[in-house]
Image (cartoon, rainbow, N blue to C red; front, side, top):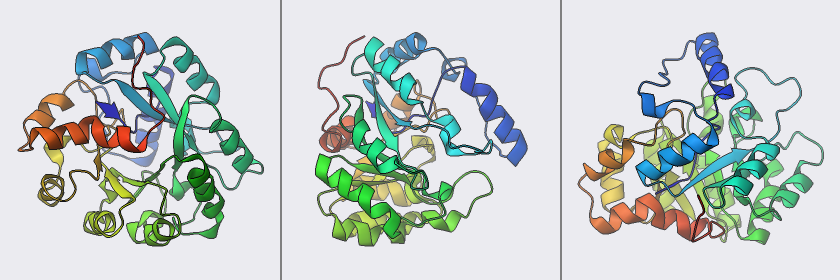
Length: 285
């Protein structure tokens, strides 16, 4: 399995998660099972081996000055962390550079990241910047993704914290998908609460895919299951959004679904390998 969206998992992030959950009054349970707890890299590799997970794709960025506790960047990896992870465990961890259009020089930083072996794509937490996906400020990043032949992952639908959820409405992907036909766009988190619109965007555009991060298979809505079993078999990426979903038990949840072997394989890793073409075919320990 390839997990296309895994947040930072080391123990230092657990306190941040617990603080923001308390601050924002969220109903999120962390560490509900011992094998889903925050862990050091070697422990995560051992967990991945038990769960048949080959590679984690992780957002990477620095934290903007003055960022509040619920700013997404706190829960991503720092560039130094992804360098350490990839050096110690080749192929097990890769990153997507998370853009910050408000930061001077960020486009150049994204380009520099894409020249690094760890970087397999770009990422956008659009709710952080008060711009929808079709805002002109993102076009240079889409052009960069097209130039480098990498996908662009974004959180669609609502976001945690006190943010304008409408900024992640999937309708805004129509323009970019049409203007940048060689870029694969991943609408993550099922686009909820606008899942119907998210699925339709994937059906309307060959270069739009749907990602499941934060939603375990046992909670996939019937409408989404119909999509996966039908025309969405080649348009679905599996992700955990760890720590919102753990890794150990999702395999059995996927197996419990009424999916053909071909569809299961596509969702588990085939679709991810197709669009994240930079992920190594062989991985280290």
